[in-house]
Image (cartoon, rainbow, N blue to C red; front, side, top):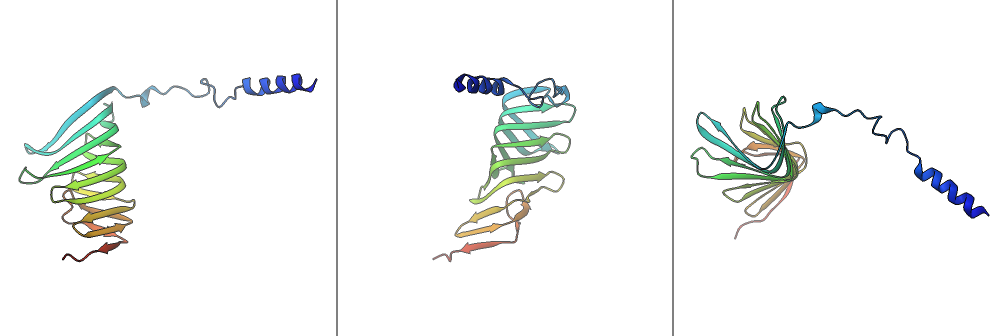
Length: 176
């Protein structure tokens, strides 16, 4: 006789819906919705007629009023050197492009690869267009030739030529 009562109690508890999970308690915010969505998105940023970088992403959400593009699923940024021939590439799972300033942010499994085989790995990376600087405030790993350096943050030019790694520790292997 106690099984039917237990069954009724379980049925009552599982069928009840709390106010927090109700769709009526959370108003739908249309201002947070993107104006456009696209797949296989490609854009080029230029300065004085010269290509500065190209941005490719698998999916984007564009917010026209905010002049902001959210890159989803994967993101590749290719920086061109001053002679317009060498490349530095940033690979990330997601990111944001500010169309007003041409600043970028890359998040989730970020890697930077230069034409001369330098590699940088971090979780979050920022690019400031006004001073052509890359930086991160999260842990980084920098690899070049026989050296591996870890640090708590870094800043550098886009080709990792003038790099500063903060709180660094590393392994240096002498070349033979």
